[in-house]
Image (cartoon, rainbow, N blue to C red; front, side, top):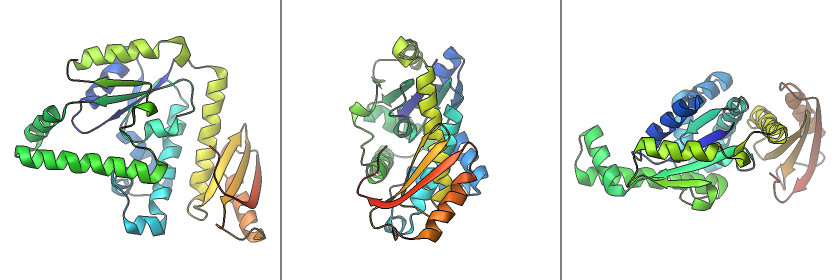
Length: 271
């Protein structure tokens, strides 16, 4: 069985395709639930989480680390749900968090702009000019967000295992293509791939617990062993109180058995 992420633009038909895939395979279909879970777990208003994952960063975000915190919370909630397997996730961000998960099938749904404009016009009763302006602004926001946060463009086909253009396909036909691909042996869940995802989820939970106090950290997990490192110049390498606080916060996260804190600055984060 597999995890399927469906990346989509506004009015591309991706939501409908994702729902049909989930129905055909008997998988859970999730999207907005991630925001609700993160909102409840970390006591952050859902609207602020939604804006964090949708809007391009503002100058204030760059200085406040606000967006990093919200994304850390969403990543934690998403990966915890994905550990249950047999999931179809549609919307932003999902494919970013499972790039190295072997049993994750990453799909991009695209549609012709004229079809998207027509759908926007019908849904919101606006002119063609206004619909086009809205869609272009929305696309720019999404691409700006992903470029700033991950250095990745959502339109880059290399991010996905499967890109489906809806010009000549019905949602049912597109769903059938995705289902057939998901059933290939290379996307089957193995014990190794399951453990890798669990390690990623644990690292995400620890990062979410630390990010408010220590935004410039990298977290890795293997089994229950967690390693926390800091970015070059992020803090004093001899800051013993910071190390003690990191240890205490990380050990309070469910699933953590041991914590190693390395305050020696690193130039780049490993995945």
